[in-house]
Image (cartoon, rainbow, N blue to C red; front, top):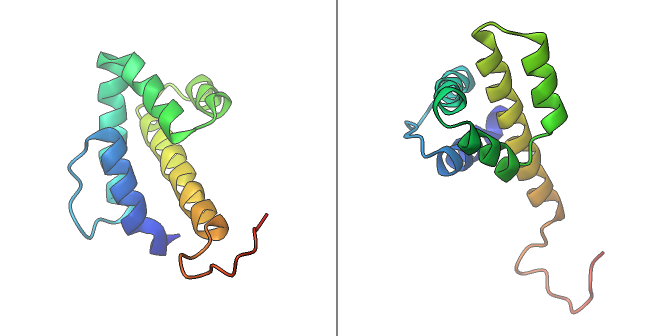
Length: 109
């Protein structure tokens, strides 16, 4: 999913108010996001919950990660989950969005 990284980065930056440099690697994005999540969880848990809701991350998956891991790696695991969900949404939009010039008058289902 490396080809989705630039678009994913833009969406993550918009949702988290993170300043993310251009040409970032997946690992760097995951680390930056993990640090932001750690701050959110420790200082403003409500903001963390709102972020999960906004990105539409499964609450059960996050609870499972939190239950299974009590180390600092938990933040990277949650970051990976957020990145994965964001990429799923990008793929879905690309798959189900009709091009603007595809107007033959027929409705698509």
